Amino acid sequence: MSKSFDVARERALPAPVLGRAGVPYRLAEIRLAWRNMWRNWRRTTIAVIAIVLGLILLLFMDGLIAGSDQAIFGNAVRLYGGNIQIHAVGFREKATRLPMLPLENADLVVQTARAQPQVTFAAKRINTVGMVSSREGTYAVAITGVEPTVEASYSLQAEHIAEGRYLLPDDGDAVVIGRALADLLQVGVGDRITLVGKSLSGTMRQRTMTIVGIYDLGMAEAEKLSVFITLEEAQTLYNLRDRVTEVTIGLQKVGQEQEVVAALRRAFPELEVDSWATLRPELRQTMDIKAAVSSFFAFTVILIAAIGILNLMLMAVFERTREMGVLAAIGMKGRQIMTLFLWEGTLIGVVGAVVGCGLGTLVLVALNQMGGLDFSFASGMGEIGALMATRIYFSFSLPGILSRGLMVAIIAALAALYPAWQAARQEPARALHHL
Image (cartoon, rainbow, N blue to C red):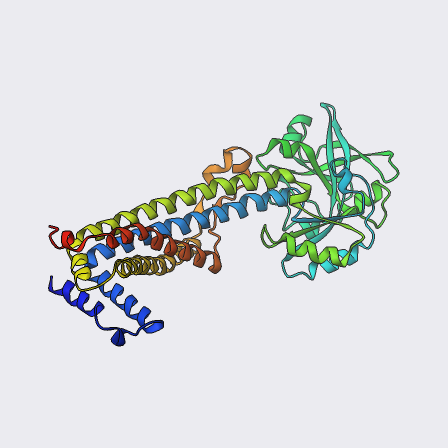
């Protein structure tokens, strides 16, 4: 009782001691709230721990979700040829049919793209539709001519060669196909298949090719649809000489496309510059759905933390009913009592947010240094599992961590609002006789 009375007496000091208004007055309120907060250090510690654990869990989820997005959608973008693709005018309208539209100034486009700091690679390609056949049957495919030396380090197909090897610059009649297509054709490395593709003039050009590699992505549909030959071979076969039909660009991270697309559109207004979000809207929809589900789980974690803080603040109000009666009896107004409790809730939230952000960051950094999380068990769980890397690294940024900490501090202050209002409504006489 003596400590409570001393604190109350300090709060009731004449206005000149605390300051009539402005910063000195507010500082006195904050100092008093800070002292009250640590008078029952066990209760405050429990509240802070609850906030810290909730924030660490929230940062863990954010980092894991962002890391899995980079793994899944990053690999999906690699599967389809890059974050950004540049074509001649008219391609976008007929993109699903892979029109043979030569791209002018391809070398200049590649040089300009590589000058962007976010770009990891820029490569020339030829894409056309065609068919591949063996004695077992004929199947429609997309034929892609690539620069092996440029794409070998980026291509998802090159990374997942299961038999044989990837293309080499001096390969002539060589082709790399998918596992599912090889099974349909009943062929293997070293076997010959017939490749038919549409040339620039619209005629179909045919050539017998040797299979030098088979890639296995764990996605049968993707493996059936795409075959790869060298860019030089495609230029010869489809009457394009030194020309190409697209420039494909890879970026450091999914999500950096908008800035690079804007820069390239300014540099080449006569060309069509598109990101994967434009050319592959189904990926954008999948990403949006995943983001919505992730936001729901994040909201659930925040709600649980807020309910915990609210419960702790209500307990604090009921435990200190007599103290509030003393404060009211010596002249403190209900509004002032409410402000005092609001400051206490805010300070608890701030302390929890600071500690939680620090510990949460250390946890994520430590997990990344230990090699991330092992997700190899997901490799056989459909297309999403196939696109997910065997190890997921947590993705986080300082602004993102600070925004989560600020949000938790605000929630703690709002959670203290109702208990503070309850404290302000206490009748002094009844509060003084509360047991």
